[in-house]
Picture 1 (spheres, helix red, strand yellow):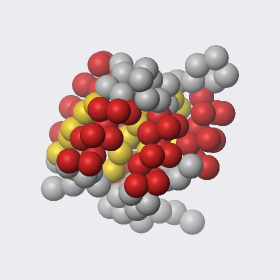
Picture 2 (picture 1 turned 120 degrees about the vertical axis):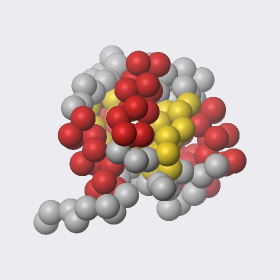
Picture 3 (picture 1 turned 120 degrees about the horizontal axis):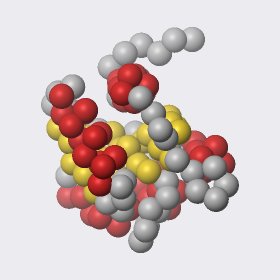
Picture 4 (picture 1 turned 30 degrees about the vertical axis):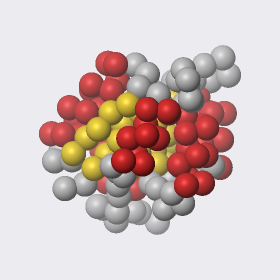
Length: 127
């Protein structure tokens, strides 16, 4: 069973992703910020990390940078609803730091599941 770590400071987003991914047969762990997530990942590595960008304590860009530094093969999907500058700038930075996919909030179930399956190599990518 593949393990996914979901990082988001919004409990509703964490819960929604947790339930959605569990229904698809994944084992899911959650964290509310990057510090909590990195500790979890170090103790129980995940096959995929889905991280929000704007969070308290340790935000997503720093979390991605640290994950990729310590675990170069980590697979990451970055999600963001933006902030003062909108999601596209944050998501471009996440991609530059090694996120395999980026998704703007709000996203729909099919978009997220397709990204998860693609990044985890469970489907063939087109092109």
